[in-house]
Length: 315
Image (cartoon, rainbow, N blue to C red; front, side, top):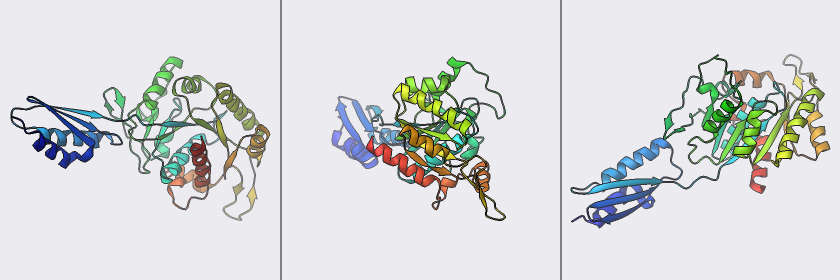
């Protein structure tokens, strides 16, 4: 006869209150709460529980369960390319993580993925489990997935709309574990990926990135209009490439203008989240896979992340 108390004690020793034991005849069933565990830790716990519950003559079944995480998506978007959207997305994800949010990063820029370089994850390939991708870890505590990790480096991605929608679904619906916030780096513009994102994955809010110049702001306004028509709140605007300080003489110039995004935010009644200066240090650190937000003393992206975190807390 199977001793239930013996099995309960053995299982509790390895799983604590996560496990519930049920014995019926020669069958032992163990239900384990795996909420918050990454795939490796979940597999290790399942193996330990199975070993603890195994006694002579018993048929053991272990069921791993997990509460579905309440995950909120933050879309980082721009009306046009070349405004530093991906740099803002990477640093926003890292800064939010440093503030205590369990943050992941999705590089949804299907045709021009750059997050593997920015996040020092080039050459890393995600694995799959039960039909879902496992995000790739990064040195900054932010798991990520990117099309750049699924295709050969330098290979052109010549896909039509339905294929990009399928790729986006694989990235967003991956096994993100306990991640509560996903920062999604969207491609520039208002095309198929943006529409699929809004219709199927519904961001909690959007951060719009623009340079101060009028042409960029015109396109940024179109992106804002897309989210507004879809009922997705715009968290605010970020002004990138805002002011250049000469490294030799220290004189500050404004090759792209200054204050345009802030003025546009005010005109549209939207929050202004902050400025990112045009600094060589930001460019070189990004190219080297060392996002500035990973520095505890970062004065640029941390305040932007604080605005976003405050918005998330209020909505």
